[in-house]
Length: 254
Length: 174
Ligand SMILES: [Zn+2]
View 1 (tube, rainbow over the protein chains, first blue to last red):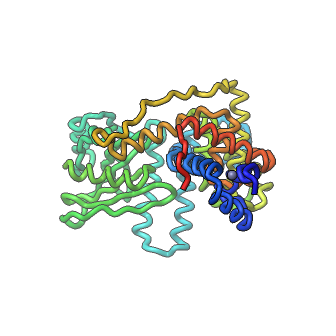
View 2: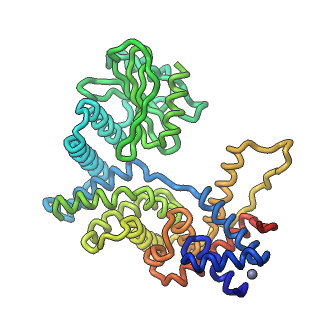
């Protein structure tokens, strides 16, 4: 094989686009030709560096909810094109939340698992997505833990931990009271880059603690744990590893 | 559209929104533009879902995202100047002040990100489709609308540029 034809096929060799026979022929040439081999090594290193380091982005929660809502409306024959245009995007999110609940309801029936467990996640997921609508995230907007914690007094019957995690890269955004699983509960809101983390708290039936447990659904992650007679649920579209880091910081700080 | 088609669309197409968003981020280099384009592309995908023949849904959605991105760029008259590549400070390789792995990784990411951003559009898109989205030559050809030979030559030229930008030069071949 000539160097010219070898070099013309290096990309395809690298990308696994050659037949086995063709690949073997290239490899034979590479074994005896330092110039081509060096060119191949450079290409291979470039490919490795780029594919290992190039960013993969997550579409933000709000965008996903917006799209699910818009798709539901666009597919619905009762909504005309002109009405659709006038819909504000936050209404589309509301439709997206409805879809999320409907589709998880289907999962519930077909999966035939523990209904109690599933409904808790359904409600938390719906509450989390709803909270991302403008004006729904916080009732008290403050980066100051000594403002957020007292705000819950008298509004809810548990007093959640509100640690300051600024230095760990999880700034406090605020708090709100939300209605989930049949009662009004405190929600402490933290941020991480463009992601939101909602931390829900319930009075726990057992007084002891329990280590964090995670599960995922529809691209959202949940980490739940018990501490000081309170059951906590952290919900976010942040990746699981970072959500666990958050929970570790949260539990260590209070 | 009937309920069954809608559910099929949600099951087959919507799981690829992260990939769609990633492609739009690279093509438009703006997160807000990328969000708008992905939403537009999703609705267009829904409209043309009849024409989806059951091949790779991800490549199919990415092709729509790419078309919407091009239209968006024209409409917005986003100028196509490439971001100038600025050489970052060289990383010391001496053991005395070797930066820890996380720092090296972060700066490696920044270097790669900058190098990709500096590529002309037609090179950047094939690199992203190949290295980030892991598409085959045929799929890239379908998404971009060019023959496989063109995919190969663009990819080769893009990688040559990246090798220079990233200062990769394998001295010893094993
Ligand atoms: Zn050779």
